[in-house]
Length: 205
Image 1 (cartoon, rainbow, N blue to C red):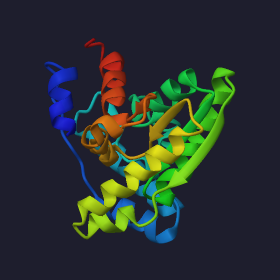
Image 2: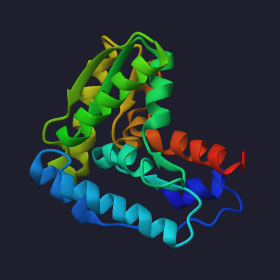
Image 3: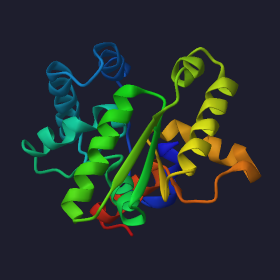
Image 4: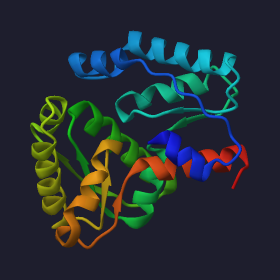
């Protein structure tokens, strides 16, 4: 997904990926981001810098809280995938719904939106909804159950929200699948917004 987005939004920019599934795995098992995982994320960011990256994007919301730590250590721009998402949501608010399939993603996303609202001086009334069982279903290969739970969560949040934030990039495809059943309000997902932020940082807009 990010390779395709980069081709559209970052013309002429060389992109490379660094993947360590254990970072999110450890965070899920621990119920939140731990100090040892933060240290490992910072090491990955440093490795990307040493490999020649002019900017680094952390693409998982569950570990995004490590970004402020890394920014204290490096001058290279370090982007968090959901930062621009939070800004956009707060500007569309004030009633903001946050939808996730993982508690370890829901909590940091809510915290980010709250912090962004304070920083921008905007009111924000946040309603969080966890799609119970959806993550486990998609990991087991049951995409239909995952998508059904996400669609139900979207409809529920739409009743009390001005805008809905999808806390995980993987949820975005449900929007297209819902067709006419999609709630008639802004529903925001992070990947494109994040890549547009990267384009601005790199000066390729």
